Image (cartoon, rainbow, N blue to C red):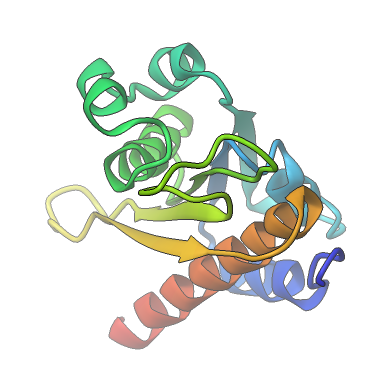
Length: 174
């Protein structure tokens, strides 16, 4: 199983953000800071990386990211609405161009029939220029196999790949 983070993804993200003079902040739950660690492993990350918050508990998501009590209560922390609110929240609280969020069930316990162990939601949000109406947030659901370390490593790689995909899509739409 994959227990190492893909080292090329953070470099590719660094190049894309530097080239565009854009910034990034991350809100992590199940990954516990691993995305921020991967991003800041690149020398000069301070050029584009603003902040990383590990908002593991419901109250932390609410307090630091503005995730609504209703979303947490109705859908649970591991859900599309919460991943979307986390991505938007970190983008707006940090006042950056891009927000990235992860929330999931890394295991070995905590899963359910609807949300088995390995279920992860990854959110990516973009802040378009004021008045452009180009701001958006996307969320993808994944189910990863393996133990806790495997699920967390796969989540980091997938989150970085999703972010890079959105960066590349925005580049081609310019």
